[in-house]
Amino acid sequence: MGFTMGLNLLLLLAMVATNLLSLYHLSSTLQSPKPPTPTQSPVPDHLLHQLRTIRATITHLARHHPSATSSTTKPSAVSVPQDLLLHSHLSPIASSCHNHPDLLHRYMNYTPFSLCPHDTDIQETLILNGCHPLPRRRCFSKTPPKTPSSLPLNPFPTSLPDASVIWSKYNCKSFLCLSQSNPNLGFDLRKQRETLVTYSSELDLPIPQFMQLANSANSVIRLGIDIGGGTGTFAAVMKEDHNVTVVTTTMNINAPYNEAVALRGLVPLHVPLQQRLPAFDGAVDLVRCGRAVNRWIPAAVLEFMLYDVDRVLRGGGYFWVDRFFSKRVDLEKVYGPLIGKLGYKKVKWAVANKTDSSGLKNGEVYLTALLQKPVSK
Ligand SMILES: *[C@@H]1O[C@H](CO)[C@@H](O)[C@H](O)[C@H]1NC(C)=O
Ligand SMILES: *[C@@H]1O[C@H](CO)[C@@H](O)[C@H](O)[C@H]1NC(C)=O
Image (cartoon, rainbow, N blue to C red; front, side, top):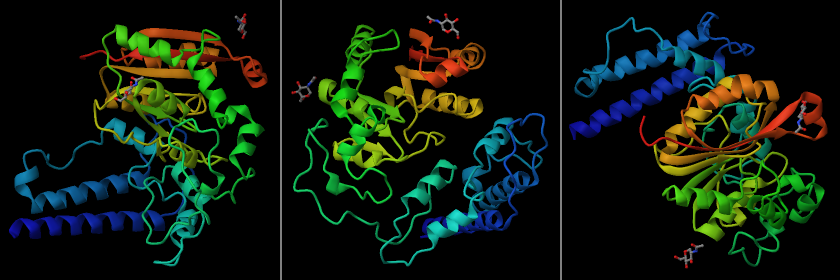
């Protein structure tokens, strides 16, 4: 009884604290984001305020639960850890929605218990700007008017059912249109499969070859995450050919990628690149990232991502970088050393010129690498 009351009090306090935080951020004046030069720049007021509020809440909670936390809480005047400051610049902690109050208001402006507005574009914009997880809503998400007569049972069906998608926000109105408009979108499932299992240049690591490498290193591959995996074809091949379970993080940028992955009977995770991976430490055997991870991601964001990949990989697991592109000089000076700091074994490391027009113009290269996490640090 006493425990339950204590727990309720704790939850209440946490709720009040969260609401105070959001109120503060919704009412605070907007500041333009500053470039990430955290070690030199002074700590902005709103960040200090936020950190003080978080600390005050924790102290408050600790007073009500002395037994649980007294041994770990330190007295006041604790300095702010450098990485907390740095990360707060990249992706403000517990407050990433506050830079977009107008969008957030539009997103939450709906009639409870009725049909939600069809605003997937607002949701994606908020998520991509770090407002994730989005607040839940109490309304019914719009569903397609018809259901298809049957759903595909294997991940390489001859076609995906168009009736399972609400097409109003897209230029294309069918999966056939998407697969014909641009082969690089990944909606030509058979063609994309070919690129994943065949070797045509040193930048290729065909899936059968990867499985052989892992096998000969006595490393069993059962679970994986494909970051920015588009239509999920990597997960599809791993499932069909090797019985490996791979979840795919994917966003609906200009096409219904999440729907496509789900229609293939695979798991789509609607999470942005900057989010902490939704898996526990050491839980997976493989993390792969394709072209979605590239030089357009700020180096500091990429660095936090690499260490999060390391966190979810088990010892002996693999990190697979497929066609990461950057300027050649940046690969040598920035990204190569960044990856090197992980201390992984380089099973494969291939660099080649990116020969399309923007690649030639910017002196860009592709990197394909297979790296193995050491068993112990
Ligand atoms: C996958 O698992 C099924 C059921 O256990 C088995 O019949 C099949 O041979 C396996 N396929 C591969 C490629 O290992
Ligand atoms: C790659 O591009 C660089 C210039 O950016 C050039 O010097 C080099 O010869 C190219 N390598 C190949 C293999 O084409």
